[in-house]
Image (cartoon, rainbow, N blue to C red):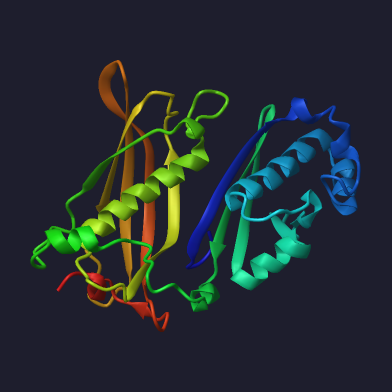
Amino acid sequence: MAGDGRLIGIGHDLQRIADLADVHALCEPDVFFTAVESARIEAGVFPAQTRAAYFAAKEALFKALGGRIDAYWTDLEIVHDRHGAPSFRLHRALGAMFEQRGWRADLSISHSGEYASAFVTVSASRGAFDMDVPSDEAPLSCELASRELASRELDLLAPVVVTVAMRPRDIDGNQHVNNAVIVEYLEIGRAAWFEKACARGTHDILVFLARIEVDYLREIRRGAVMTLTTRLLELPSESSYRARFQQVLEVTMNGGGEPQVAVDARFEAVFVGAEDRSLRRFEDYLPR
């Protein structure tokens, strides 16, 4: 995700190139792909590979949106800059929704052997901070921490550990947790950390995810027990409006054994005033 912004959704899709090679509908212009996309695919060195990658990219964007809108496949057009980097050009209702809400979609496409994959993040740009935020809703609850913390004496560098429950819908066809779902698990850990650290009675400062890097180190199989640790990497300076964190997701199979690290992630949070949308210091967010 480029620049500061609020993460709206993440989507990932993996396609076996051979499985789509004989799907005739994918070769018909203006069905799944625009006429321009279809011409570009057929003119390429490996049409089947490009077709699978484009299909995966559109699937990934739909997954990132999570059913928020009905759109045609041709409302999502894949284009390339002069260096070959892919991106989306959105049309009709889908394009209007993104423009109105200040959203952007970032796309990454890759190929490995007989597979093509795509990863999409949808985020709200800095200008989207101008949107109204309902006063009775807050992205992070402070009620629990307000009851538990009687003073500012809080070890901010102490890790916060939570157990993550695996849901049936999290499992893909290979009986593994889908990588895109893991980002939802990380959000659980972030919310737990800020809930513990925040002792404010009002919600005058909001927390936004500005940057995230995720390393997937090990597959997570059905039935694994997952433990997520979130910690502040270092105390920010008094003038800083950013805070850097690490999250480690460990898995243990039901049969026992030593926990193994499946995911190692880093993220940056920024702090924004709920009323004026100005950047606030991390110091301002902490309990007094």
